Image (tube, rainbow, N blue to C red; front, top):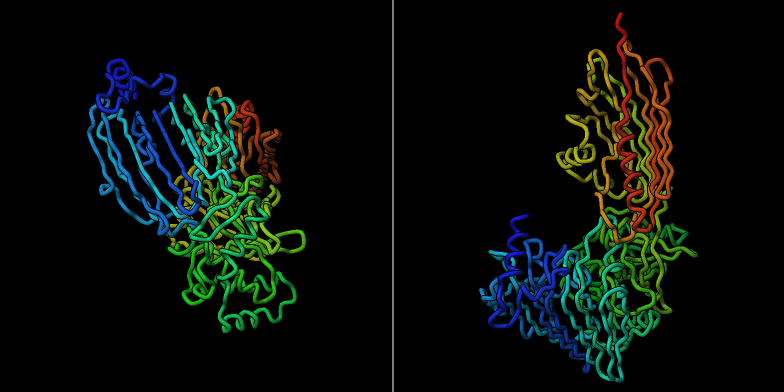
Length: 634
């Protein structure tokens, strides 16, 4: 690492200007290289939507890559679909001395189907897989794309990621004065950023933006990085004229143009589901039966079809093929619910373990996933239609607690998905422990998980034996050499509770001290995670979910041993949560250990990070508390 820093410093002092395009490592201000893997030297993005049926996007990006961690920062790719084409794409590479070392034309870019985003599965990507041989280097990327869709105007993000800085970035939107774009600036304070408007163009400019350091437990990037969203009130999407001045209007357009004509179901299937729900008297009962029918009939798969990835496959096709993507399976489930008289809402959202919101004050084409909402009075039950295993009404960390867009008969509305409170996100462990004279431990372990803590366990019954073994080795990585027998799982899908029971043997668990043993009563839920130290923290502290863990261990020690001393009860109470631990000697050779921890979600000032770190560090220390088992020596 020091060698790389020395080389970069030497280059900054010795490199002449580039002979051809006049790009220079020398031209990078020193403060832009601090904490940076790359520097955007010059970026120009021009978007022309004067004709909303033909959007043109031209890009030129010059990026200095300082080390291997910055190799992906030049973003050497462009997406396209059946309704768009890449007219030009190329990249030129320069070494640190200004000599051009490579020139890649369109034919050198790989052309593959886009994956990983269910809302855009009919698109493809041209990308360059460039492997550098020396650092630093400069890469110049240029592209031109034309599209018949003007619904998707990319956001301006002058700093693209952590450890990236920008010397200059300009983003221009040229438009028809009768259809002026709306835009929403976010997080621009404190940066050298200007916005200029003319009757036919909006220009966003940024200069000398320093790199943002990644800090553990920060809010999502959209709340930190400067960015501007841009959208048209009137746009085209695969030949369909759209309108999105507000969410109500957008929802009505989407229902009419994208959803209303794809819900036909064969009469035979309608008759079958009506028969399934014939004895159900409530909408919930009917919806449960329909949801189970869908789970048993179809499977999830990415399907290359539809309007820009937004129009679902017809429900009749899903019924015939028995597969579909998130849009298709959600639409199919809705069509079946319609057939049995149960209302439901096609729902668009950002699916991610980070809680991205659909912005309630900026109507535009947003989201990357679709689920279904079933109204029940003032509440909405949410259905994840892509899973054959998820219980009815359960959503986990991928879609919980965020603003989403529901398409109702009255138009689009922004609502929030289910918030799992601490009292719902529980893990209750009960353990009967017997310490053997040789220091080994035999334990009968039982655990019940609910809420978000149900999420990473309910699929265990479907895993192979070696996968289950690896799961517990990772979960209890602090325990050496344990073995599991008589394992049993119970998945209560209606109560949404997952129970694990098993017998566990741990050789040499108690540490021998002469004739005595040191023994840690907290065997199965030791917290070892301590957030890294962050000096001069800038970002807020973010905790995404609240939860509660309760552990009770009834511990029996060998007859010829006594419990020498009992640790005092401990209670830690902070704004981040509460930790309680208690040791009780119930008989001469029995000890009850109880532990309860509650973590509170929230955003806290940067100054509180060290206090949070101290809280977890103290818990980690207390979780390792040992008691002395003293042998009676006659």
